[in-house]
Image 1: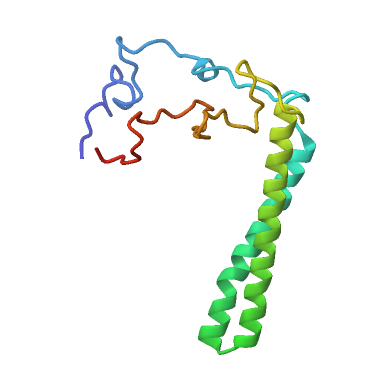
Image 2 (image 1 turned 180 degrees about the vertical axis):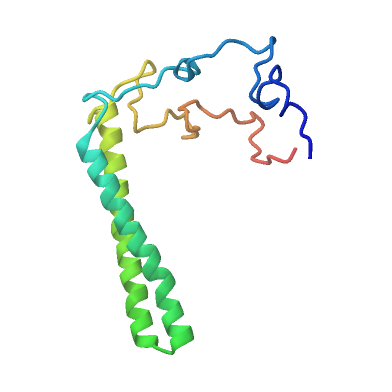
Length: 155
């Protein structure tokens, strides 16, 4: 069988190995895209990373126990063991949720400071500004009420 280019010394290699005249020069793959940031010591918080690893393990155990408990009770008929395993999952899930909420509250307290700051309108952070009837929205802006005395909101 005669393959084109086998006998001809002027034709070299495969079509895919030949470089086209329209193909750009070789490039450095590291030059593509934005530079990769490197974390500094200031960016790394070991207590946050430690809590993350701890919560991953706690929630994995909780998920396993919450799934395995009912399966033991239903498929194996071991209701006592299945309920105990399920309760372990509930306890671990509750503990993980508690630790997570405690961390998020501590983190938001660190950001805002532990004291209420007065704003421009004289209302501290934890309060709503109200009108004479005590009506206000979340932003502290008094809610407008109709002057005719009716509380009908449908028209």
